[in-house]
Length: 139
Image (cartoon, rainbow, N blue to C red; front, side):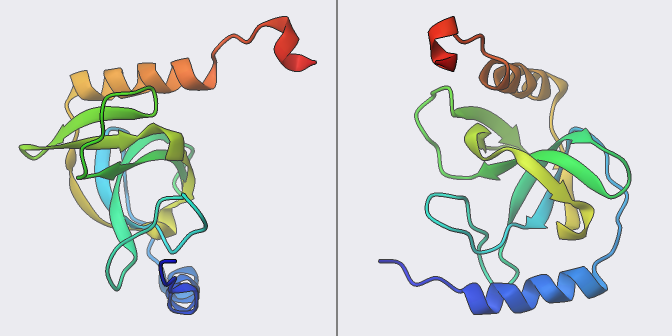
């Protein structure tokens, strides 16, 4: 089993809570964010900052946003991954890991995703989140 760094992440998280900056951000931007050390198959951050890139999908105000973590690891195209190009590099948007986040997790802007990639990712998310289920699904 992989060794987890929960204690180190907890200290980093406490520091972000106290010293974090409320940076200005916009939809379609890609930022480095403190993803943390998480449970099971939840996406983790890398390095001392527990960081990874994230695509800002929806801004809920100056303090909160809905985002999709990104990965440089290429996965086979499926409903859970969407290919994305960032600064000339191809990776994947991890659609199954989309969630709401505090602006205090953001620390450095990387770039802005193309309008075409952004629309593709948003449409894929809509399909996953608002899929119509048959009546039998609800029991």
